[in-house]
Length: 304
Image (cartoon, rainbow, N blue to C red; front, side):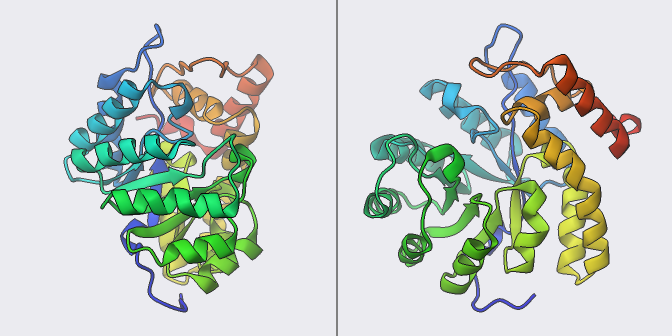
């Protein structure tokens, strides 16, 4: 694949799994189960894990829990896979504090979601991310998801941020191939898809990987799709895309993330599916549809 310029976050190309946070039935974080999840991903060959993002239910974790989840994943991975810790916040000071903590713990990168709810201007977005970059030495991966944050990080702003040394990549979840093309054209950042169902389209315009929800279930299949595309096996990568497509759509459309993926993991015997309010379990119709999707994919013969 031809790139217009070398990207500086190439170490984070490929698959990053947006890791779920397991809870006990009581609602407390299940750190033993979290360690087991890390071990499972190491065995599967998952190259990078992103704990405490949206999929990790970060909005409902306390600050102490947030830090302990990061520390647990870094310790459990023990250098066998990279850790891209979710340390973003809509308060710049809090984002800096969390990012410094992840840096001290030995995380390989920080995933920095755009400030949410307070909807800063483009100047405010630049100042926010620039302040984090100035205060911390760890590589930063911007995370643009305007449907959740209420504000798009415009390509002009990303281009300015790309000149900062420690900002190396962006998880782009605006759902726009035009915007993704602008980022590839105008920056030297590694562009990662933030939507599983759009990974191949993003790769086709210069993206280099995905921060994946479905990777919680079938990381090897996502890696096979990426490898096929990287080897210019377009028919093979398309076959994987079409196989994964239905499962990806159900995991992100039946209920807010991570409700479906946690339910799927429960059905497959890899967790108890416990969520924290205000997230609630799938209704019966949604659960039945998800089970049909898992069955159609062929997962019931592959439970590990």
